[in-house]
Length: 264
Image: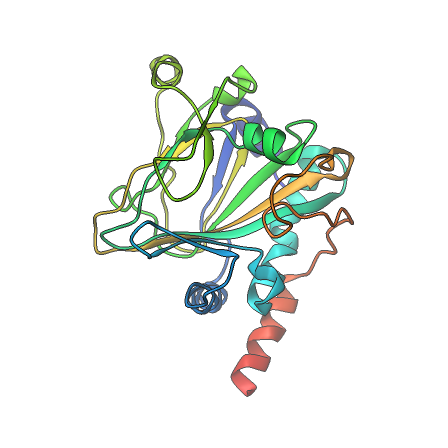
């Protein structure tokens, strides 16, 4: 999946791009099933909210075949290679959940400062690609993005270890206010199967979910090979140490997996 010149220009200007309904329904359903199976497990890779509900599951490509295929899917990897002009490795894979009624917030932050400070990533030549596993609506805690905020570079952040169950390098209110006054806030929403790509320095966050509608999103963090981390402090399942290029799989590989599942 190559991005068009218009899409490349949009990404450069805004810092994000949304591609609706990239994955067909039967593949999304397989990923939804995989997410439910992953979140039902009690293992170190699965982080939970303070009330015990699942918050995120790391490295599930290592113990779920559907996730493994997603983590190397050419529909996701190729656009990032196109933007970086080189091969990529998988820095991180996770599924984030916002449980119905109790899903907690994600504070305002940029991703690169965490990758830099906690993992020793040299440059913001890495990117998150989000695959919607549920319909993401304006009401169920969608990601909020500040357009063009990536042009401000890596901003000063502080380590918040209290607000939620997951520690995060976050931005202060005045910094966010100044950026929003200049650029506003957008909430990319869409049906399950949509894909959101955003720059490592885009400012983003999300409110809690008090609706009956859960919101699960699978995230690939792909980094340029020249940008391998040099001083990781977090476990390997959060910041991978395998810097070999992603060996891309095709949509046909996913279809063959689905056929095997049906046959079984």
